[in-house]
Amino acid sequence: MAKLALIYGMRLLPADDIEAVGQADIQLANGRKAAVTMHLIEGETEKEIRGQLEKSLDAFFEIHLEP
Image 1 (cartoon, rainbow, N blue to C red):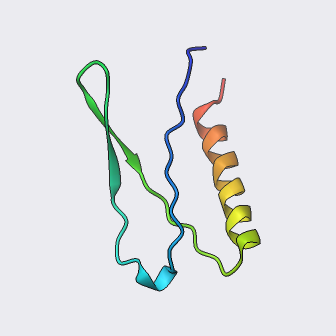
Image 2 (image 1 turned 45 degrees about the vertical axis):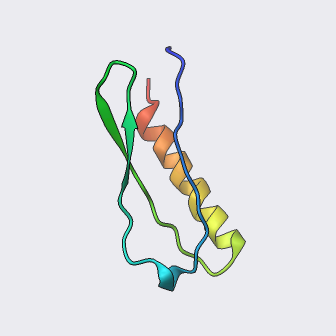
């Protein structure tokens, strides 16, 4: 398997302050461009947010790294 790179970003803000979430652009070495869809996870406690994030990561790797 080729060496992989996981690209991510995080920022913690009050949920009511968020109006929209866009995508992040990536410039590839071959001159092409790619995009990363940004995801929003809301919760009232750190435990809720961490739980949702862990489920999201599990699902991501199940989808993208299937043999």
